[in-house]
Length: 166
Image (cartoon, rainbow, N blue to C red; front, side):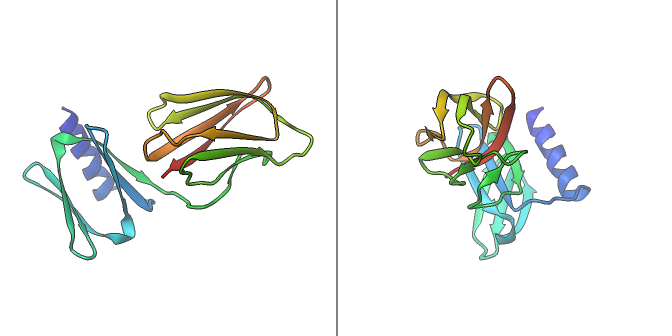
């Protein structure tokens, strides 16, 4: 059933939908993930239970459809400071390798609350309390490569921002 659902969703997106993405991530059941820049992909085809990704240089990667957990199309921006809704908190660097900085731009306001890191499935992978800090530093070196959400919450508000772990 999972294979049929994945195939139907892919066919719908590729045939009828508009795809505004810069990257595709192939996620396998064993937890591995491989990313491809869409402008470097010549074709993606499905034959005999396999998905084949062919690059512009004619290199090919093949995946058994039964071994795939998901395909994720991402429109990502690299090396930015992701701004939150009212521009009072931002994170950097993005993408991050080991230390994620969460900073307030309002010099009178200090970070006090809780920072939670969530994976793309919404599962909490890390959580830390912060108290009266201008810059909170969260060690994310133990996280796998991928897309994560950083959620900041205090008594007044909750804000969430996306980041990429490289």
